[in-house]
Image (cartoon, rainbow, N blue to C red):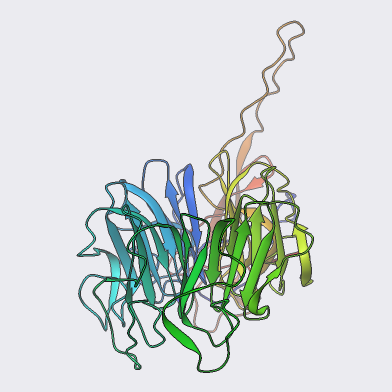
Length: 459
C-alpha cells in the first residue's frame, strides 16, 4: 500500500478536525451522473462523461497510471469525457463509452480486460477489442467480465474454471479466456446482467432470472447448490420466472427486486432457494455487497441490511441487521446506490456522492482513511462531489440583510514528528492550514511525506 502510518492531528481553536490527505492537490468541484463500488475502491462518472476513481490501487483499479492508492478522486487516464457508465470489481474496472464501446483497466491475469492479452496489469484503460460498439451495459465480476449488447445478448470473458462465462464449457483450470464468448441461449431477450465472484446472472426481458457458473453456495438459485456444484450454461432460478424488475450480485450472493417492491435473495447465507427479505415495503433498485445489500426506496431514500461490522449499513452503528434499516441522513434525495465490499455509496439527485462503511483503503473518498480499522458508520461526502445547495431566495417584501461572509485567516501549525505515534521512517515538514471561518482545509501537502488521520465515525 502507498499509505503512510496514521497520526491524529487536532486543532482546538476551531470546532472541526483536520485530516490530511497524502500529497493531495485540491479537487475541483464535480457533478456525478453515476457511481460504482468495487471491493475496496469506488468510481464515478461525471456529467461531462469523465471517470474518477478513489481507494485501493495496488492492482491499478483506479486507472490513473500508478499503483498509488488515493483517498480522494483521481482521473482515469484518457477518460475525461465520452463515458456513459462504469462498473467496478475487486481487482479491475470497466467503462461503457457513449458510442457503445468498452474500456477496462486493472488486473488482467485471466484476460478479463478483454484486450486480447492476459497475465498482466493495465494501469490505464484499454479497449475491449471485439466490442468497439453495440454494448448496452456492463458487469464486472471477480476475474471475469460480461457485456449486454444492444441486441439483448450476453457476452463474457476472463476466468472460466466454474463455467461462469456461460458458453457451455469450463476450463477446469485457471486458464485465461481473453476473448468474449456468447452465453448459451442468451443471444437475445436479456434486459440486464450481473456478475459475482465465480457466477453470473441475467434478467430477461420477460422478467425471469437465469444464472450460471459456480453453485457451491447456492448462488444459482436452482435448489441444487453444494460443494462442487456448477453449471456452465444458464439455469432457471426457482420461483423467478417472471415479475422481476432488477438483479444484483457480488461474491457468492444474488438478490432480485420484484416488481411489487419486494426482494428475494439466495446464495451465501440464504441458501440455494430464493428467500424473501422481510421488512421491505418497496424498492426501485437493488445492490449487493460481500455480505450486505441495499435498496433505493421509492421516496429516494436508502435502506440496507445484513452484516454491519464496518458500518456499511450506514445507520450509525456496527450492529448487524436482519431487516432493512434506514441509512442515516438519506431519507430522500438519492438517485442511485452502489454496494462495494464492505462499503456503500449513494449518488444524490443533485449530483453529489456520499459513502459509508470500511475506509481502510480510502474508498469513501473523503480524504481520510488508509489504516486498518478505519470506517464511517454514517455517510460522508466525497471530496469534489459536494454540490453547493441552492440558496433560498430572500423575500423581497421584507429583505433580510445578508451577513458578511466569515473572514478567513491563515493559522500556522507546526507538527513536531517526535509527538506523533509513528515516525520511525517518515518525515514531517511544517504544514500550513488555511481556515475559512470554522471550516478546516482537509487537503495539505506535507513536503516529502503525507499523513492520514485515522478516524472511526459512528454518527
